[in-house]
Length: 555
Image (cartoon, rainbow, N blue to C red; front, side, top):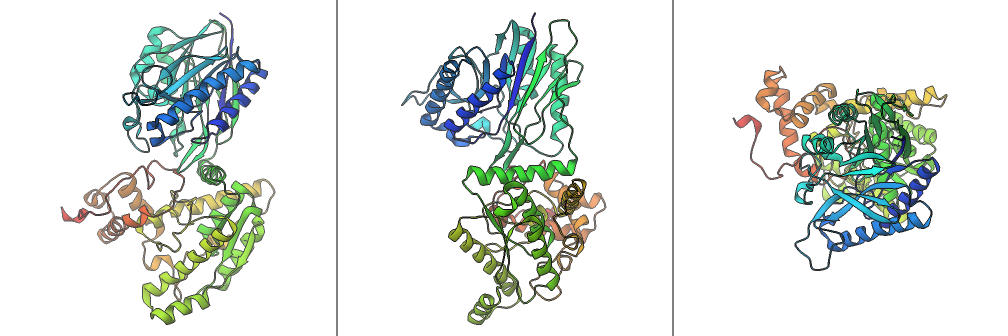
């Protein structure tokens, strides 16, 4: 049997952009064809973007998506690419073909289609519909039941969609049908540590089928999800034969050798450091959200502290420093070193730096309302939020919230103040990791012979909201290393009070942290979207009632 040249097109798509996504299929198929590929595979739901959520329930959308698939097939043939087999994801309809107006019994499916010679020649509907974590496909899609094995250049290729490779049944079906290659198209979101799980699973499936596994994954940000790519091919012995880079669009080429010949090796991209992975995920999420929603620039408050410094540098990496508007909004409590650090950072990244003192505005509120204590502290944050949103309305910038996961967990933010904004790049990064990412980014700059973007004093000084004289975060919170450890156990691993005490955590610390987390749920519901980078992020992953009388210390 002849060799089979395959291309895994690791692309960035946008939900609902049928025309743009179709154009991308044409462009990357052309590249694959020019590279001699017999088969080019695109990720899950390429034509529609992913996840489409309740758009799947609209017959108008499903009909348009089906027409787009048929049109892509015709356009490929018209451009002389009809002989290249193209596998891509889209939304389908239970039954056959195009959804019909008024046919309420027809249900959406998560579908892979095969295009060749100007037509959709066959399709495969995803069997297993995940209903955990960020996924709710079970309530949206109808499951498929059929096995799909196609022939390309004399070789048999089995097709699965994402979750199906994690379950035994679909792989067993391909193995029983006989295949020279198992192709899996995916829309697998990034979370730290997930990459090795994919390759280990693929190695098991390759052994089960007795054929290599080719795994193609999408890249780019979509709302609060980030897709990291990392497409790969693994052998039946578990060896990674080819691997694409993470977070970048890429065409990964690999050749399936003749039957009985040794496995062929292709390009194998270098692995990334753990901190670089998280950093790049945050940047990709921000870049995708801004671009896909029509924003060319961002605005944020620059306090001179570590959180706003890290977010500003991420924004510069995502959009270019010239497209970052950093606003210093000093009050009577702002230290000189904080103002200096903010200006220094803006200069280092080439940001548009502005200074807008808030003293007169705060004084007016205090004089009219007689504010003091926490109310007086919060009005400072809310004045700053108003300034940023006014700037956004006037100049069209996307406002970035700079709070981290630790602050979000314990409610250490001001609603309609520092929590204001359209996107929160470090929403799923705890405070301890913020410092680590800042160190990584500065060291990466040094390695390239560049000036580190974050001033050293922003990293080393004690964090403070600077809303009253001499304030530091640890006045009202446990030390961040301890706080993050308790939060990880309570939030991400769902350990209760008794579990935490059994592990040796101080009772007073546990009770304080749990109380802060539980009563801040209403704040978290109002916080902007931000990229998921951990196994459990605030948002789709964790759904708790705002109104609840359950407390961990009552049993």
